[in-house]
Length: 471
Image (tube, one colour):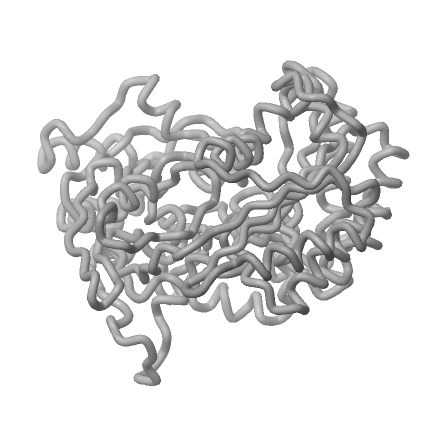
């Protein structure tokens, strides 16, 4: 849907920022989609500012005219967070690529929002430091903050929430504000940095970030193991955490997904669930911790233990995990992938996955599972025929049912992907009356409602009757 103010807004932006506004169909389509299954018409135009100041000035133009604005990083999201559901202008951070400062002594850095996590880590080579938040995709750091990204290393290093010290944000009216400090703690007023983390561009557009860095581990150990049942794998992870082992990664690919891996790589599939572990040590050695982990896996029915030693072997292990999406495509060629993203207390995973398996079988759905077991974050990926509307509807009902089950055991409807357009109607049951506080904050910072409209909040998000538990 084209917004009625877009033409005037784009003309003003082209006059003020020559060469930075793009109206071509291909550019608009690229900036009108992400990796998720939701779709919408592309934005009316794309604005690629060359500086944070230009971005803020362009945003002020949009604000004056009431033109919707959709922030865009790289487009690696899963929940339709970059869709221009009301038309308007996509504002891309692609040109905001400066790494402004790396302070090895303070173990922090200052970067523009368009810098990707791999670009930052390339710049950190030789410093002995790393930025460990790893969502899999080479996402932009601004986008990672906007969605509250997490990923495989969260058990030991935390998510973007814990690793963002401060932000520069362009508000709806074009004001640039800075939040946070370089200090490791502060009780000086509201924590505005955390307010903007996971706000998905609905409160402001992130232009710069001050990020916490971490020392490279002195030693790492990788272990892979196969399990006959999911409860066995989960028990091994829980016991490893209980024993205080320094787990950086505890990654699951279930036996369904491993069938896709077998088709993709030619490796022999034995119908088992796969776990990949990585231990990190900041000092000393990991020999004893690795031995304890291996023993715990065996005690819980694990077999086929593998201890990759060389860099090539270790990279091969995690390459398989990071290429899970490709393995999924081998299971059902040509299928659309509907990704789920619940997170629950780890102790609740066995019962939940058993119920989910029964539900999937009853609905005739194919949905391989991967997850970050140490923090209870699960991703069922429902593979649907794009021409089968009935199958898609069953898949969407399963996605909602799964979120409902997560809430019932004290979990969340999104561990790391955000809400976007896909989970708006679940926000009321997830947050209750606290959702009203969120809408009040949104209205205060964006009274014209131009910032990423249609995301996070439903049109009737104050109407509790909108939520109906699925059978």
